[in-house]
Amino acid sequence: MPLPHMVSYAQNGEDVVLRRAFLGQSSGFWVDVGACDPEADSVTHYFSQLGWTGVNVEPDETLHAKLLAARPRDANVRAAIAEDTKERHFYPTGTRGHGTLVYGIAKDRAPSESYSVHAMPLSALIDAHAPEGRTIDFLKIDVEGFEKAVISSGDWKRHRPRIVIVEAVDAEGAPTHEEWEDVLLANNYKPALFDGLNRWYVRGEEPELLEKLKAPANVIDNWTHVSHATLLAEAHRLQTELKKRDEEGCLALRRLRRLFFAR
Image: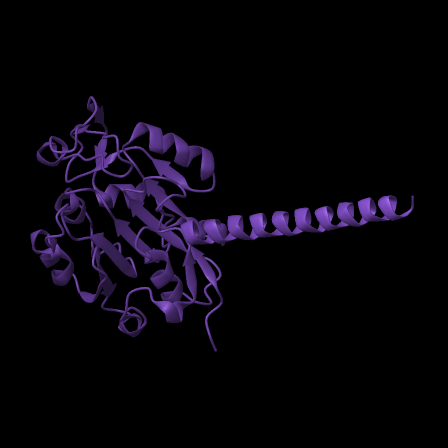
């Protein structure tokens, strides 16, 4: 049977692939490091609409405020995820999602004035905000060049997300996974998919998930990106409005004809 139609909010169809992996699962839990906007380009918005909950980490003060307003059921944490608790400088830019903790990247992106953010290891984040014994269905990491620090700060023996998704290319599209992939491989995570932007991994305890992640989002997944869906809805609205105006115009013309010939 074909999959039910879905509207995707993610930048690269990540929520489409995750829907395929977790099809039929009525609830779930995520950890999103670099959550950005609660809806635009969000990997988690689709699942939030289904009633899933999770932990959203975002150092950008404006985006964090939006998460607080839009996701009251989630834990929304304004912090940097790193190997220690030293404060870090965060460099926002004029482009959503391009803020970074890495000055070498920030200086090429016309950063705004930087500010300090609290830091904590990934292991401490999960200990603090994930219920004891709670299965983490997916961990998404999108931190603009800071991926190695995030991954190195995890306790992969105690915390075993079922699926890990990591942005794995730089601004020019060159691969970056060799900087941090060894940590995941050493902790029994299996490479599953490269979608052109992210690399996907499955914990070794669930090899059956590899089959569900063998392809990026595609036509068989029966999905439409929200931008396309919005345009289609607007086109339908305009078509309906024009049809109504045509009908009103025809009715007015008939009335005029009756008035004219009644004389």
